[in-house]
Image (cartoon, rainbow, N blue to C red; front, side, top):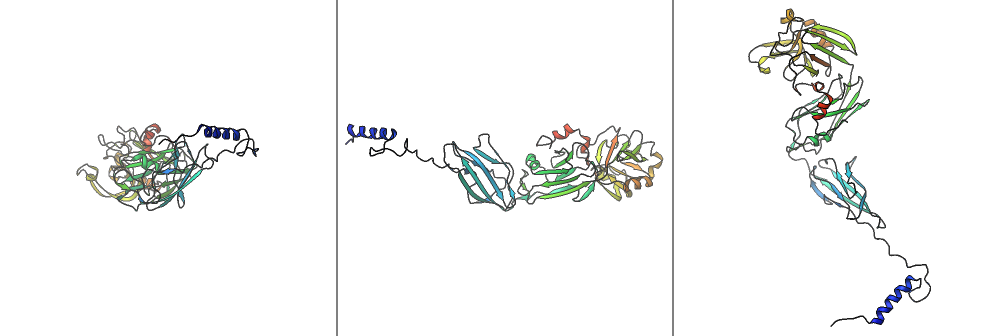
Length: 396
């Protein structure tokens, strides 16, 4: 059986609708306003999250995306843990918000997202919480972090982070690091090996600069199955400006302090074929005496000297400025060493006493240049070369 609407009834419905539009009430009397009241606008719909509300055991590198329903946009998004908020960026149409950093291990996060739309009466607020996992896998370890926290260093001192294993996600590591200096100076990170990233300013640090390095490593994935489990911070102060120029062609070194000649000394550099590495080095460290064994430098049994005095360290391959009483007759005259800068006991002790880590030692007129990462020779590179070694281009 098919139901039909009588024509007369259909006409009545249309007439009633027309009467209401003309300003009449439903019973034929005058309406209280010039037109029927519009239906109320519906509220906006809440956003959705890529991490489920109430989730536990969330990986710190899990993607965190907040999305507004079709036709709506995000007014605000806040993802926070006690004492810290997670950074993120909105899409051009503000339909999505994407977290730009990593989360921390064993941490509770709260998400508050507000969605809005022009055709909706009121915004919608979405609340959610989730818990990240406890640390798993291998924790990130370092072979070296320099300089020491609280130290006073020279104007060429880089920040050195040498990881115990090669890093595959270099951009993630760089993005977790922040360097601030007072007064502010432009600087940037650059990878000098597959496991070591250094930070240097464009020019030498200004004397008196206060430098703070923040490493947001908790939850960071280095991309090789290793995760950071704790954040780290170190600070150091830049001391006076001391720069030494060692000329291997003239066998003379000139030490400048705050732009003025502070001292000089003759030396003997590396013999032909074992020439002292050229470049601009920051002093790594120093010791009062050191056993120098040629086997550790890959030179077989060429020498083994048990007690070399006043050793100022320049390269990982074993270059030092040190006392060399056995070559005094050649100092200032000829290069006869196996690569070090040797001078008299008196001059070596004076240089040792007046040198701190981070001081500049520039070796000029050498036929060979030290490879990147062989010591703290970051300033050997031009600024453009330095920036090219970053996984996150652009000066800070």
